[in-house]
Image 1 (cartoon, rainbow, N blue to C red):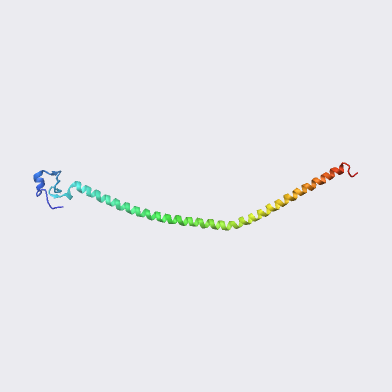
Image 2 (cartoon, rainbow, N blue to C red):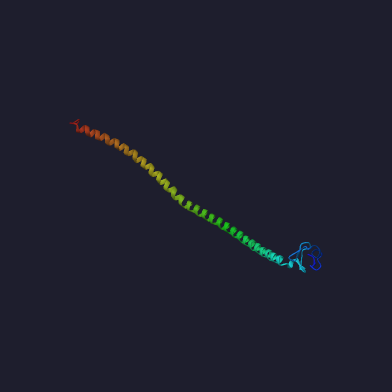
Length: 141
């Protein structure tokens, strides 16, 4: 910006280029630099306020990114802890489940053997009953 004032401004003196004290040609305000114009001062304050807001938002963003990174790390750790607990529980209980499976297989085998023996016994009983009927009917008399 120049140090030109309204008194020295040839634009304003000749062309009537001033609006509300602001020379549109040389950008000076009355006898003062344009930066002292009330509208410019208001805009400068708004820019400063916006810059402060941007700085605050940037700090908030960085803080939130840090929190997200921490939460992701904590989440990964918790998932790993859960995986380890599940593996330990599985290792601990799998042996028991295997043992129960072996016992169940043995019981099923025994049950099949007993059912086969029961079928044989039923056949023998049928024969004895047939013999008893025959004896009752007087075959042996």
